[in-house]
Image (cartoon, rainbow, N blue to C red; front, side, top):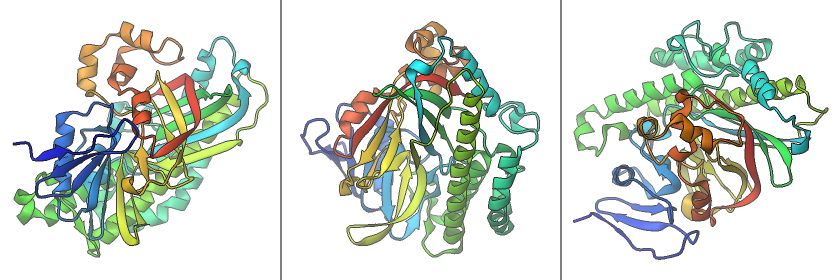
Length: 418
């Protein structure tokens, strides 16, 4: 017999589906009208059965399978943190900047602007991330070096206690994009004003910190791993030395990720100023948000550690960013402060299939057709990021209408992918 039952019968956008889990807390899933793979529900149920989870587990409409915990998940705890539920791209998030440029200011051929952005911001990965990696700086420019000088003392303190969290040269990746679903876009909004939108995180150092502490959690629960529904859901107890050090490392990685986005944004704006565009301002509206992180928050009068893995905080009046795929719309949103979701919303459209499946199913011609209005790469190396590999962003937004309101709708005209 299926150990879960769905009890809510409301229409899309009217609230979550409730799944009750034997031996665990409820799952409240904002997924009405959005497909969810059975393996994702299995992972959600595994998380719901952990004794450390407070209240209920939240699933966002973009929920899909991740390592240990699904991407598109929010949960809280009073007593512990689960490193794998934060993930290895700690502090990954979005930044958006509204400019004074209008869509009519763009030249007919957008290739020169895309190439200027690609030259200004290292992206992708080659040589296995070593010295010749095109996705890192050969010699970090002054803005990156100066920013890292501020970050470095705290990092030294972290790796002194935990040498296994060390990364060979994090300054070389500060102000760089990365690979996968990380991107830089030039978009037009519903008023035909142009925005710069970008998505990236804490790069190799965040991955190293996340991977290291996931293993520390497994070691801590070594005797009890067999009792866990998934060994990747091992946790660190509140107040323990590893817990304190992990939270410190996560907070540092979030600051690195935020700085990384700010440096890239400055580089993109600088690159655009070298192109055939009118003089413009780039400070009309700015939005920054993490979507892979843990934070200390108070909900319903209780102090909690809230983990958002592929989810954005959506407190009442707070601005956030929900991107679609590289051929779909994106949204600047304002949170409604819904307490049921721990004041959270989705972080994007969410994958509907794996990268491997997308590469097998779609062709370059399919990708070209799906991105015909976007100046972007249209080669075999980006097929796994083609719009068809993602869920319908309009369905995702409809499913969470009680979590956020739309402030601006954006449509990309240029997209840079790693």
